[in-house]
Image 1 (cartoon, one colour):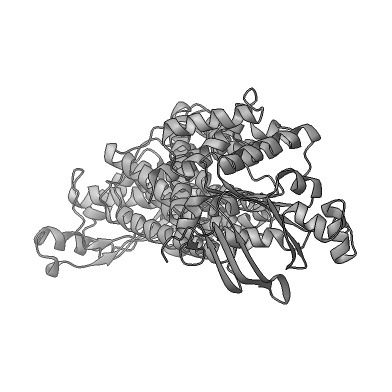
Image 2 (cartoon, rainbow over the protein chains, first blue to last red):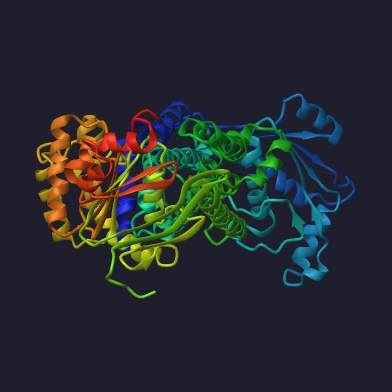
Length: 388
Length: 251
């Protein structure tokens, strides 16, 4: 591979991003404007709306037994500033209020909760002695805040109740689905949007890549470059590098704009580095989708339309938009790569999960594997069917 | 295959078919090193297809093609290092300046920085584009774009240049500037294959011409030899004598 060629082509592509008004708008201006507007509308600067959630709690623990753990847990939930705890005598009543939107979630404390907590403290180092149980949480699927925020808060409160505030232990006899830790704090609506904005901005790379390839094909530039000693590997490498640089600029810009309007994500340097890396890796996926689009499209105009076949599902199912969708739609979202980018960034920035947490590593693995696969498929398809 | 010095370009029984259409039909031709060769014919005669095969952009259906002693099919990379290609339609990036377009293609041929700078300035000057070199190509007139198109093909000083209708749609002044430039290249010993359907262009510039019609080579020789052979005043009359049609009738 000759780097003089690769860098010359990559430099040319970056000039396209800066000088072509459509590319400049989609890659730089649109995400920046969106971030600022969302930040102003929903963030700290835009009125500092703090979210509070009414949560129903049903205790199934028998009245005859000691309920100290249950009361301790409910007490800790009540102490979380953004929760308003409402006790219910039974699940049916609570579910009725949940369906009617009177509460955002229902937590069912199982009848063996006391036993489970006691069994842990009787033999903290011996999981075989524990009584395992599950704390059930029902969320209002129509509330993006409930779906994203409540479960991690409950997890953190449960952890603090059973093991104490500083405990980072994962081993537990009581399960609820999310293992991420969260420090309950005043959170703005924008804090929930922001992680999804990064993926949202990046998916539009698909359109830019598709348009650039189809335009170059229409104008005879791909053929002209093919008549030089440039190899396909050098050409595709230059495209990948330039789009990754574009994505890097994009993510820095979105982050910068978000910061300017008051966004203060949790996490340390490692979290930020990992978040940037995940978005950059995700840009490869969008380059791949762009190449597939360019293969299918006969013209640059058609490429714009076809690009939305890849953009829309990623946008609606995998970014901040998806949080407002039904539970079914959110399950379907697990089939789009952007879901895992948003999930990882939400864990890092909203829940303050460490970069090494299993959830984030799983997200990283899925994003990396999918991105490399989509990119390779895109390159192979374009080389075989898309060059002419 | 090792490099041979007899001819710069050797085409043997070249046939190129696109499904049931035969674009080039059993064409055989040799072009000497340093020769300025014109490939003439009406639109759709197969000239551009021949050029694309010579550049390694199209696979021949049958036959063999050698450029600079290298088999175009098997040693495409070697061939691409030797050649410069000026396509019929301007193929340049509108968001880059004229100079940036030229430098990009110099870099694709891995030219040393200093030589690239020198060649770029020299060619821009010869084509009268020095003053406009830093303007974006999208702001250029059609004639200026075509001159940049030509410079992009020649900035790396190739041994062999394929110029596909380099002066089409140019104003007379630009066309004469390009003719002077092509003549100068010829004097420097470059092998030039020029396709054109302007007969006066071929007469003015070419050492030899091959007339191609419906993919077949129907005449070959110097402009004078062809005029004498067909007792014609010019190459246009030669073509009429050969085919019964004017060269610009067909599209």
